[in-house]
Length: 144
Image (cartoon, rainbow, N blue to C red):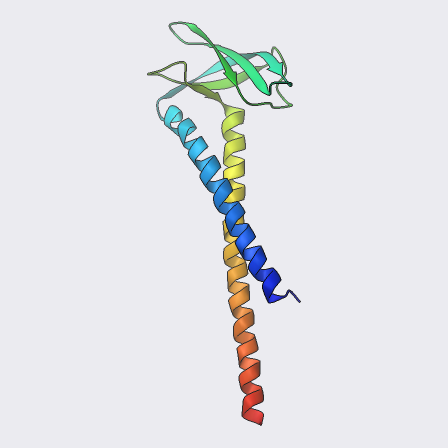
């Protein structure tokens, strides 16, 4: 059986990890959401994948000009010359993101939510366990 102290540590750890993931990836992802609200999807071309610096350079064309964006993102599925979907902001075409970036952020945001849900479930288990122990103690007291 899980000890109470271990259960408390699991609750605290999952809450901390959940809030860290949810806040950090949620806030970072919100900037993409702002771009997405006023965005236009176009195809972009992967120009360079720099594993040493951890960057990917993508070029995409709007109606007015061609832009090159260096993003701090490495995806093993993207190789030089590949095409990917780029979402750029209509008001400011230099602000953009690629679909794969948004998907990864959403994935880690979901992991944060899962950890928070896990901590809530563990809290219910802990309170159920404590109520069960209290009932056993009360039954023993009545017998004497």
